[in-house]
Length: 171
Ligand SMILES: CC(C)(COP(=O)(O)OP(=O)(O)OC[C@H]1O[C@@H](n2cnc3c(N)ncnc32)[C@H](O)[C@@H]1OP(=O)(O)O)[C@@H](O)C(=O)NCCC(=O)NCCS
Image: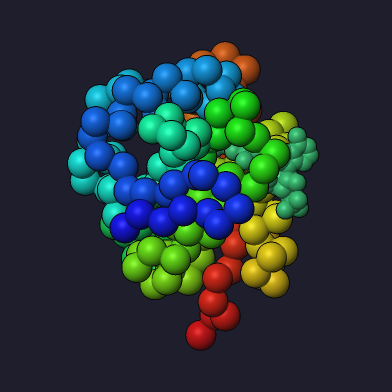
């Protein structure tokens, strides 16, 4: 699948393991995300490409989202990381990545979109709240779920509580 936003020259497409290096660099340069190895992105783009997307302009990666369906919870779609290059921010690229993620087969099946968001990451929270608002869906932080600050080995790492957007009514 490869689609282009009508209002820009950004192409949204599935990743391949060959994109791992550029995504790894983007994450490193974002400063706001946990650094993972490039190998981690190679694995994701090999095994979870159906639930990840790249935003690209003229062959340069401008943003990406990585997500997966948790093996223990097939009704959820868990968004692991999303980032947009500093020069492309504030133009709706992240929201388009999430919107398009939800248009993929796994996104259409999902009843809940979940992510963990640290309380100080206001931009990330704003992004998920904007997505929820556009869909007329509630966006809640689930107390006691996600990861506590003490779970992280690094000193001073913030807690990452679970954020949940209900995509379909409960049944
Ligand atoms: C968070 C991030 C992905 C947002 O990307 P983006 O493409 O700039 O976001 P969008 O343009 O799609 O905007 C999404 C919403 O946030 C708002 N927003 C974006 N940047 C903003 C800013 N600097 N100030 C205030 N609001 C802002 C937008 O207005 C929009 O809300 P709206 O629909 O109500 O207007 C980007 O800032 C980033 O890469 N940050 C570093 C990595 C990170 O923190 N990732 C999230 C954790 S996994």
